[in-house]
Image 1: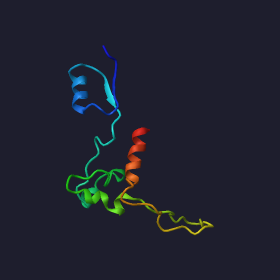
Image 2: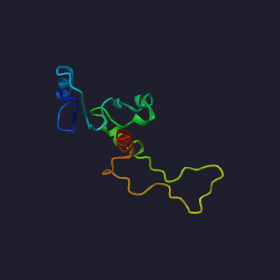
Image 3: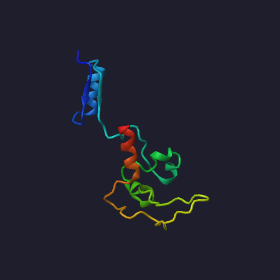
Image 4: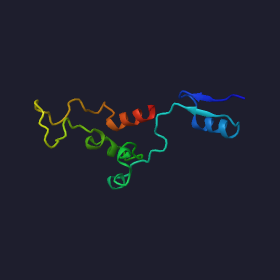
Length: 115
């Protein structure tokens, strides 16, 4: 009996599930981390989701919600802190955030998946 089948992204979920359920094999794979993430359907519904999952994966036809700059990028260079005055003037927004960058939520998902 094969102790474990590891998929690196080529097999479908259905094949892995079938091998596990019908063949009794232990299976796993390197996925993208999207499984189980609730889709954002509206701004109102997003408020009911955990903060880290808001606007990460949008329902079909609602992709514009996830692509809004205020939802996709956390683009603040400095958060004011009581009693802390940096010697260098801080810029209001970090340069470089644009449509080709996946945004911080995607990086957070990948980091958590790898951890």
